[in-house]
Length: 422
Image (cartoon, rainbow, N blue to C red; front, side, top):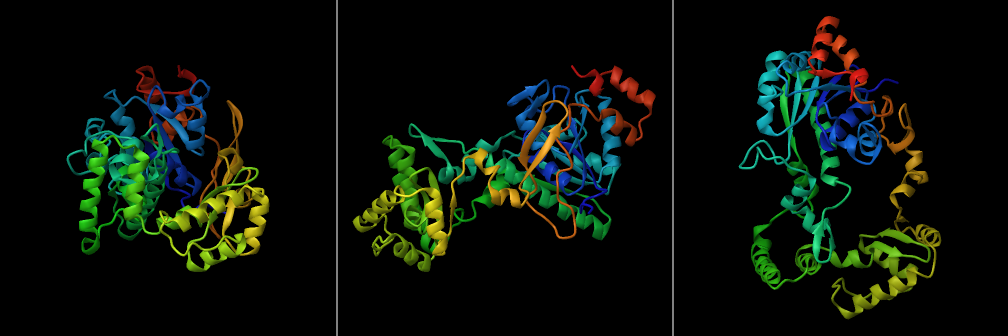
């Protein structure tokens, strides 16, 4: 089978995680993704190293691409970039907004070279507003969007960034969605366009259940909550207590998360259970024999007693025994895996959510596969992450640069080939 994006050529001008994840997904759908790296390599090549210019982080984020190296700081690089824009159907561009025009990689320039190009312009905080030109990372957006307050763990009373970088990787998904929509528009009109995505926009979407305001019921409650949280902070109250106050006041069904919809310690590990309906609440008590507290107010003594009984009860059987008991009764549950255990989970393996790859430098590795499958189209990563600068020569030939011109650009260190990498 062929991939839905077979024949689509993608130029990736990005580092780290968010937009490279977009490129990863497009490659898995059949696109030819050419990744432009600076002379020092993508920053991810330095994280959890496996050898010179190779690392676990880079290998996991960038399978199925080709690597070329261009020094965008050199004026002559614009010749190469323009040839790449002319060659590409899609450009994935993630730089500080102020640097786009500086390096001639902005949409206003790119459209003069290729008006059919779908130019994804990514920024941390969105293209407009007082901080549009600021650089930023996942952790900054966790804090700014409000979702960090709900999901961050704490250490000694202070919130810690959630890992993995969930906003980065989710932005890869939203950006791939945006690219597909841009290509659909081009199919319909023949026109390319600029498409904007941002970490902040993704984070706000992830926060849909909590990021809302209904004036008729929320205004007074939020004003009171804000006053109380301000007073707590002035008094030095720890982060967990502040968050618990917020959850008690704002998060609907919070009590259920302490009894019916949570993780429990078992005799040999942990288990996840997920009952979120009146019928499942009743079934939980039938299975466990724990009397219903008659309330979801987690501060009420009967509710606290039920939680204590449940926590003690779950330690009396293994995870496997509890899963068998709960599933027989129709109560949703599953294992609570360590990350390395998830790679071998039979459900994960059955759906090809992991893939086995072989890299010519550091050998075999396992990484996440594609999250979607199609009946009539292929969805699979085409190979491992590229060796640094491995494809510079072949891509330069494909975009129409002569051998003599490539030699001159190489001699001037505008581009770097595998044979000449430091």
